[in-house]
Amino acid sequence: MHAHMYCNTKDTRQKTGGKLTSIEKYELNKNNSIPLYYQLEQMIKDMIDNEQLLPGQRAPSERELAETLGISRMTVRAAMSNLVADGYLFSVSGKGTFVASPKMHQNLLELNSFTEDMRKRGLKPGARLLEMDVSSEASSKVYWVLGLAEQEELIRIYRLRTADGEPMCLETSYLPRNLFPWLFEEDLESGSLYQALESRGIELARAEEQLEATVVRETESRLLTVPVGYPALLIERTTYTRGDKPIEYVKSLYRGDRYQFSVTLFSRKTKKSNRL
Ligand code: GLP
Image 1 (cartoon, helix red, strand yellow):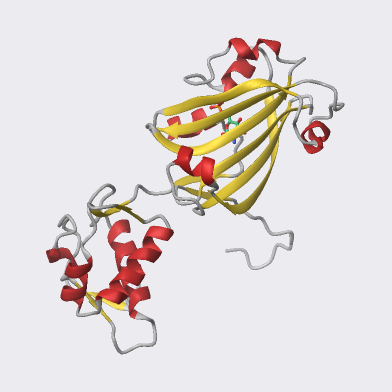
Image 2 (tube, protein in one colour):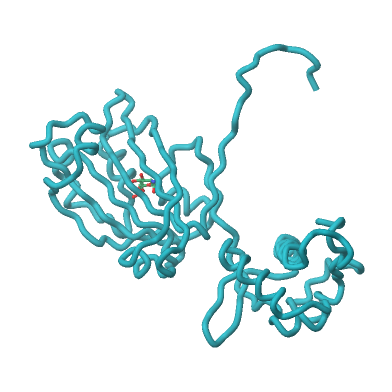
């Protein structure tokens, strides 16, 4: 709660469904240096955190917010468009602005498959197999990472991954063909690649990942159902077996509005002083 910026004047616990009554409980602070659009952004984020605005619910309209809070519609528009860009709200043309589902929180310390990850959240994992072939056109990096000579064959699997039917990420995986010729018989739409590997006795032990920010391009935008230029996270993963053999190289493009990654950092200092 950002009490220094705006105040929540009455008890807001009761779920008022985003109606005017719940906004009336807030007041923006017009006398401090924090821009009003920013205060409004924080106020709406808090309403989402406090479950006064629930996922899928219509957000208060521009007019309601402007009138109730006594601010200009331009200020409201600035706040709302930032909240849309940050993935807190989404707009449906002709219908209004709605509260988005919370971002998927992924811990970078666990080697999980997409299927496991979604199941843990109580969501139904899914995939659309867009392409699956024997590739000879992968970049030299793929061969190098997998420790293969460039004339060796790779299986390329291009999937759109979904959670409860909603597109989440696009994934291109490369695996050495000679090790997994049976992969073509697997159902990689309703089944899991990692489960298929594990059921054949391949134990996945660790993965190296690199994350970078990017934007969604045209074909990807159609598949991920977000506009061109939308923020996204590109993750490259190399997965190793228990015997430390690299067997999978994957490039995943995650929707930036739906994902949040977290990692625990430990101090390098080991001094045992002033323990709390
Ligand atoms: C995650 C990883 C991919 C991996 C996939 C396997 O999405 N980023 O590198 O290929 O999981 O998922 P599944 O076993 O559900 O097919």
